[in-house]
Amino acid sequence: MKVTVFEIEGTADELKESPALAAVVERLSSRAVHVPDSDFDPDADDAAAEVADAEASAAPAPNEPGAVSGVSADGQADVREQLTKNPAPDLFEKFLAVTTSWPEVKVHGIKIRRSAAGAPLDYTRYLRVRKAGSQFGGFVYVNPTTGTIEPRLNFPDDDALHAVAPAARRTFTGHRAYRVAIEIVDQSTLAQALDLARQAYDLT
Image (tube, rainbow, N blue to C red; front, side, top):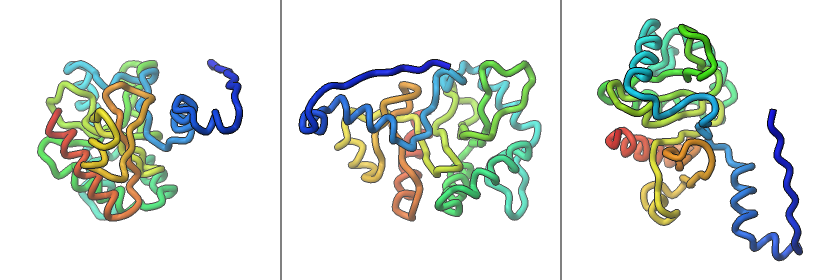
């Protein structure tokens, strides 16, 4: 485990006004999915992405009442367990139901880099929503526990982002291509999350 320790000097007023400190606090307190570079590569090449798709499709999503839309049979129990902690699980499930109704979209777990060949996808932390045939690992990553979605988008500033999704925020950690996050907590944020996801889908 790597531990980094740092010390900041300054008066209370100086610290309050520091953009750098504000950015650090935002990083530490953010509830975003934070797609990590260390565990897997969201920009997997076509071959690796198609292998992950084939593995996920080995246990297709069940088409029955109570099943989480788009999630393979192998991941249903793990995702359902995470949803018990979600503050708005019905809205999160609606997000998945809409996005998986788009052409060629499936929900996948994560292929951990250090996992053995043939190991099952991991569904215990967050999910990859991917368009089959895309050269990218996913057009959006989602966290079933917090209801956070992180689409493959990058906006130049807050004004540009908020013109599309007022409740969303830019993020500054994790993979460089995923720099937007929004929590689905009500109908308004659900609509904004779907708008962002559709934009990311169209770009991938």
